[in-house]
Image (cartoon, rainbow, N blue to C red):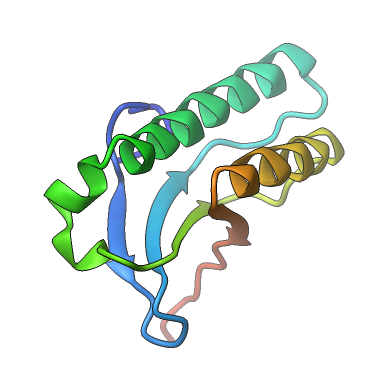
Length: 117
């Protein structure tokens, strides 16, 4: 799954340390700050994906598909392959407020690949 499949939940699990249901968005796209049009398209894709995840929660579909989510707080976690650009950080700041108003947390984590030695 990926950010480009906006109507698909990439992964869902329960964070054992917090008890939150974590809906993961896999974001493999670069933040092309030197190409504003591409960066804007990336943000639009991410916005669509986040909106789809919110719809999944608000419609109750999450309870049908993942019954263990009953009564748990939900967090959307974007796992990015690339560091956020300045514009992307502003986007996330605004998006966090909107998502929190819906009772859901939004986090970004940079995926750091490790090499086997």
